[in-house]
Image (cartoon, rainbow over all chains, first blue to last red; front, side):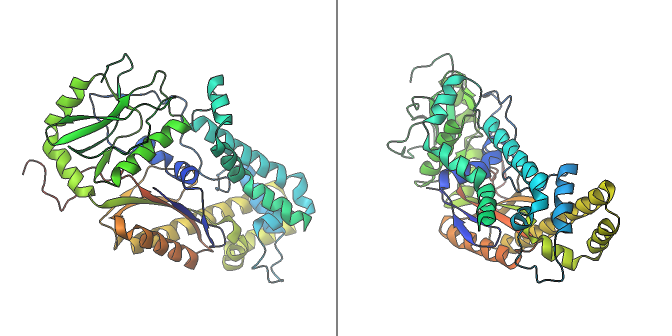
Length: 156
Length: 250
């Protein structure tokens, strides 16, 4: 059976629940690669968008630019800031008004595109079937992982 | 197998006699019963297509896991998700018409797996980037001296561009290094936010070592790139007979 590992931000190797991890990281292969036979019919994939695979991705938008500028301006280059992470940078006072809500919005919109990519949110029976799946919790945990790390850092 | 209006869902193509994994259902709710349509030296692995089939999470997983389980017992040509044949006779005709080519393609993936590598920007390497990039340091000084919306957008855009460029360069370096230990390399579809998306065809027994090597190379470049490695996978990206295999019709 497939196993998936992630090399995390700081280079640590994080074993992931293989099923959930593999699905998100390889959905574009399942949907866009693989054999096609002309005389077969393909089910409609209307509404499927290739998902953004992670909430940390850099999206070229003014919001993201401002987020980076904010983080950049708060860097203390005199100090050895090699160990300062972006979540720490975003956790300060100034970031509370802008940065955090932006990050949360980004995380939510990624979550939404994941949901539409996996076909949820359409009929109500899918909704209930999603609820009954343990993977759903894993997915939510993965989605909010960065945010909760940030929260933990603030509480420290 | 009874033919329904919905047609027959096809998971993949295997050699005739390839065993079916016990206790694995197909797409649909309840999961479809998995069967085989054999023709000549090939077989299609199938189940009845469920009504209103869509790319649901559960169905994508059923497709993927059945293919992975099948691959334990020999080569599989995975179908793209969602391929449905109108009836069994169409499958039989297809298997018999394309037999030589599909046998060659099966030969090409025998004993091999696909491993996918994606390179993403290392957002958290921002301090390293600012320290090392004179242009960005200059923009940052400008934005601090005379703070303005425009100055911040210019700074942020330069940062985003630089992070993407660093991920792209490091990702390509890693792909180059990994390529020597792969039988074949195939660029994957573009994925938003991914600077590099590449699949490798490697021997099944070398899969774990390949993943470990990818992770080692990523650690060396952790100020430049976040690498996501997935596999072993069904060989979605390597379905054409490889160049080293006998060419079509030869």
